[in-house]
Image 1 (tube, helix red, strand yellow):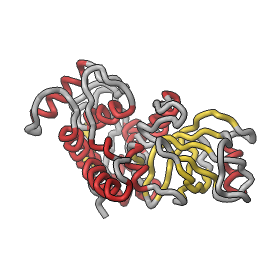
Image 2: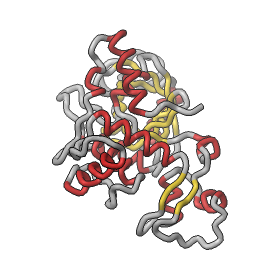
Image 3: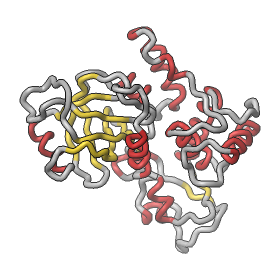
Image 4: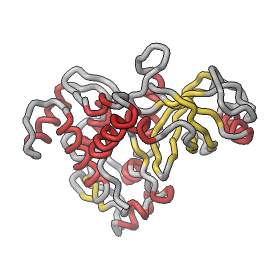
Length: 291
């Protein structure tokens, strides 16, 4: 079943959340990125512009003059005010256009290779070559490659998303059980959310899940951030975790004394209310797994 575009899901989530929880999700609709902005939301906007061939440089999370020019070009082509600012309307149209492009085709850019493009869309190179009936695997800039329908894509059709924390916070509720997949080892374990407002606090569900998590960290609990995939209700979302039990707990028989943190795009520390740059960089590293 085709999923609603991110912008529309955010708005729907906002309305529901405001009704149930008051004002906790109100800032979801306040997207505003302009010259000088930095961070994961800028990276996401740049990634969409890059996919759509408006941005000619690799996304880096810094909103400079080149990004501003790309935004203006996109706005001109889509009938939006050409102010070079990514506000709500531009954000939603960018996401819709990029998802449409992702779901159908990709235009080869200078320096692209079949392997790099396949990795970007979570495909095997031979799968992409076979789908396009390629005999000569040398690609030419401007060449269009058709992408397999999502149901045919590797990993069982799961598309790795770079979803903002505000959206995850709205649908991943307390007591919800999700799977954490470590990008580097492929090991996974189940977790249950126990709270958190600026990021998700979670606990391994069972002793076996705690053992798997500890194995991922080399047998010793550490504060190190690790890139992971957060799997919940059929969605795969880029995330970052730390590996140190701390604070309160709800599950008493899982051999885990406390909880750990799961960070997503734009999430923050509870202690300072600020984004942790290492967590945010690790989220982007996880997202790169599917690109």
